[in-house]
Length: 442
Image (cartoon, rainbow, N blue to C red):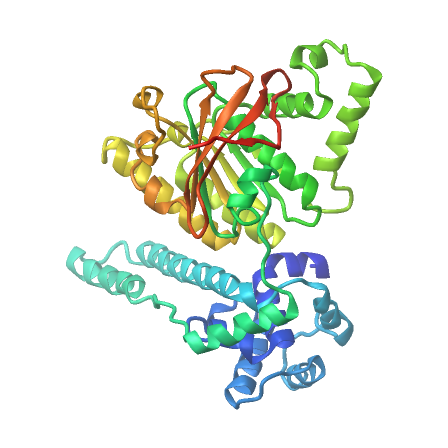
């Protein structure tokens, strides 16, 4: 196995150790309450954590790479991938104390899954070897094995407010507080105090054919254009196929009708805009992909979470997750009603946002009564369940009854910020909205 493959396979462990080396005891205090060396799979990383843990618990606030290497060399471990020059490369990895807790939680989750898998493999081997035993004796042994799963450690993480305060103040001094991710829509960003927050669930609702998918896609394009160093964005589309999504993107880039693009009737300027648009938003030569599209129509929330966590680990982070849209998810309504099921989905998305440390943008249809109501409200979200309570922000898009060429944007929920409603020009032909709007007077 080469170095690159090694670090890809153990990226979470690698980054936790790197953060501990660079940020010292401040980083250790964020994870020491819920992970141990037994949660690390690779023996070298396991030993690294043991050395660092001993060092920090002796009240030494920081450790350098040379001392770590000296301690490792006293062991009989294979250190071919851990020479001093390789360890020095860890300094290039951008991970701060502010998100080591997320990596620690991911490590813990993986360790617990591995423990469960180990018990299941033990069960398989036991059944294979003891198929001839009396049933009562066999049942007792099976109970003993499964009791190991029940006894697997599940700890609740508690953080000392004093330590959190010190860490946050240090982040402010070092300019490491996480900035928000701009939606690109001026009035919306102003109300959101800069944009979406990492770890937040953000709802966008509308009746059919009003433009919720286009709004979400344009927000994605705005993020890709403005945030060049962002990790990949995942776009789960349960309604549009991948080519339909790209055709709308082409229309937006070229400022041309989709039919003009497909019939190759673009002017030289439109064609140039199309090529520049693709390059500015999607280009990733010698780097990670910028936008990943999943157009699997029968998608469960469990499958969505598995894919997102897999990509989060693969790329060591995600820029955002978009789901278009909630009501098209594959849900088993035989065991629960639709409202309860949607509540579970929205809660799962909220937890996923926190685990992946990125904003989740989830689209939803509105119920029929929303068309009759004069004033939009959160309960307009169809089969809303816990949508209103789980969401950090909630936007409803409505047609402007006085102007077919514009849409009303109503920010109905905004934790920590103001509410706003405004009109924006809507260019359906070009699959986009104008970024500037006009306040709707109360």
